[in-house]
Amino acid sequence: MQETLRGDQSDCCRGIRNYESAATTWAYRLQRVFWRQRPTFDQTLHGTDTWRIRNNPLAWGSQDPDVVVLGFSKGPTQAGALSRAPHDEIAFKGGRTALAKILHHIGLLARPEAVLVDRLIADPAGQFHFGSLVRCTVERFDEKSCGWTGTGGGMLDRFVADPFGSKIVSNCSRRFLSNLPARTRLVVMLGLGNKGNYIAACRQIFQRCRPGRWRTVNEVAYADDQVVVVHAEHFAAQGALIPNWLSGRAHERGRLGLLAREAVDFALTRQR
Image (cartoon, rainbow, N blue to C red; front, side, top):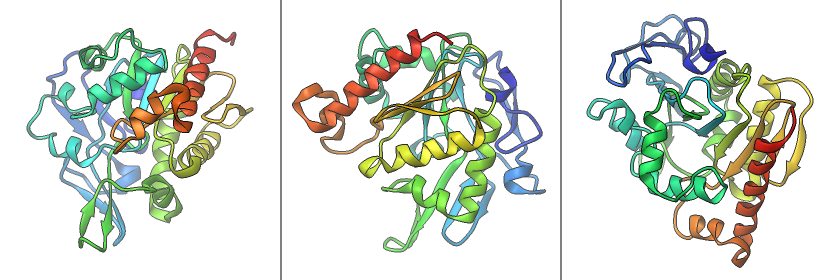
């Protein structure tokens, strides 16, 4: 089971990593994503005129977790740090305080403190696994700036709708989500989308890679017989989005935060 989150040499975003030390060397082969190229970690690019991925799959924390926390892909801040920062400093770089507030709000952290997130990310034998739906960095070509960007609204929706993006997401989700460790009860997806479009797109992805009986838990959560998938606010959400989501009944978006908390409690207490 642990090989599912770690990756092996037979599918998308697969790799070889010695998990005994955070300082060990990484070696990756991505034949399903990059076909038969021999990619160089964090340098090889592959894609189309509109979308591309950078060969740099990473994950953190436990390989036999109770809880999996996933973004969409590593953003430009994380990708840019790969050649300079220690492995455990890369995940959610610049956003760990916000992530701590989010995880605390839904009942997964005792206090909203970034140092607690630091410890979870660095703990290979803990309860949490951290990564992203697409393990490599996803970038799109922005015609306004005439350059590549890893941020922007609707990234997932547009990426999945593209034939290239659909193949990448399909391979990654099948490799890392189709056969989760038996003890895993909860997957926290960071992101809600405009009018819930990110939630709807992710549910379709889970249903494809994990065929079976899926049901709605509430507006921000869905479940199969093993895991509950709960959507929370994205740690890099701009403006008032995070404060509003954390506000409880003081704002409409706060209602979604309360629903996420209820779904997390359901995931951790239900009989399987």
